[in-house]
Every structure is written in structure tokens, then in C-alpha cells.
Length: 111
Length: 146
Image 1 (cartoon, rainbow over the protein chains, first blue to last red):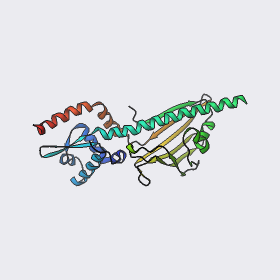
Image 2: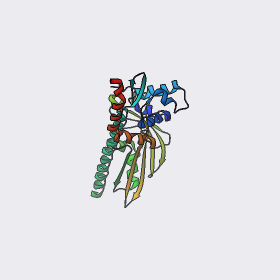
Image 3: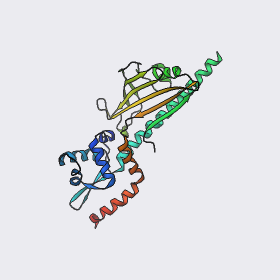
Image 4: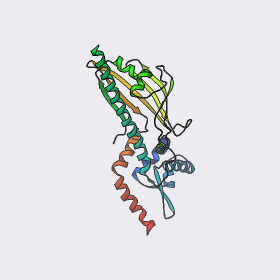
């Protein structure tokens, strides 16, 4: 499987890379056919693909003589993992704050 | 599945009381985390949580106060990464307090997980159509395996 060395956020922070992912939700493209959708040079597109690949958002399959880019779930799972982590984190913290405030109000009422 | 982080809590306490817990380091430490927070616009501070190597995250959260409206609104950045100097997560935490029914409605939004409209769309395709995509890829791969 693709090693997850590069970071998911960095990978999708670029608008061109997001556009590449967007195109890949509809179809699989070769690097050449992807490049046709952009003003950038083919090497520039290639560089973006490398970054997306490194972060686990796409995989590359050799089919015949062509190299196809295909969406890979790993990158998305990592993003989801982060979101889930902080979502839970805040929920727990806010509950704690609630208990704390309630406790404080009780103490004040006793006085 | 959650794509945006948003929580609304109602506390039966005045905004002033809730605000204190959001902005006084000694009170923040009781429910959130110890930090060198100061209620000053532009102040840099840090939180330290558990490092998560699997996420390429060293556990240090770098923050800067971006907005400060006493008893109403507090916004700070929330950045992190694999090591000091390399910040890959670039998000913001927004607190909004609204006085309501003798208490406070506290809204928290943690934004910046690259989940803008376009990204959400891609996400939903990944969620819903993944099986379909697999089927498509299978068809595509067939010529290569013949």
C-alpha cells in the first residue's frame, strides 16, 4: 500500500491538486490526459500527482503502455481520522467545561 | 460521517462566566489544557497534546489570537505538524458566545480541514461511490491482467 509519509493537508491545500482529485472522482486519467485539463505544463502536473500519490490520495496503475491515476481511499481516511479525532476531542472538553461550570454554580449557591 | 467540526453547548451561566473559562489560563487548564494563553490580539501561545506519530503530528499546537471580543467571540489559529518548523495542519478554532435564556449558548467551530465545498463533494463521492469506483477500476484493470 502507499506509505503515508507526506501530509494529507498539505497535499490538498493546493487548488490544482484539488482539481485533479475532482476530475478523478469522475474518471480515471492518464497523466497526459489529466494535463490536457490544465494550463500547466505536463511536468508541473506530474509534480502535483507525485504529491497526491505520496499523501495516499491517488494510486498509479500501469495499464498497457499507459500510467493511470486512480483515487485512493487512504488519503481521505487520514483526513477523516483527523476530523474525527478533533471532533471527539472538543466534545469531551466541552462536557468537562459544563461539569465545571455546574459545580461552580452549586458552590456559589451554598454560600 | 462528520466533515466539519461544530459543537453547540448551552451553559446555564452568564457569558461573562463562560468567557473567563475560555480566556484565563488557570481556568482553561481545568477543562481544556495548560497553556501560555493571554487575552491579547496577536498573542502567540501553545497547547501540548499527545504526539500522534501515525498522523505525522508531534503534539504541539501553535496558536495565535486572531479575534477577541470580550464575552462574545474568540478566534485563534490551531496549527501543528510532524516537527517544530514544519506546520502541515493549518486550522482555526472559533468560539462564539450568545446570551440566551439566562445562560450562554457556546458555539465552537474548528475550521480548516480543507473541507471546503469542492472537497466535501470529493469526500461524498469517496464515501458513497467507493464500491462503484472499485468496480470501475476492476473493469479498467482487466485488459492489463489478460
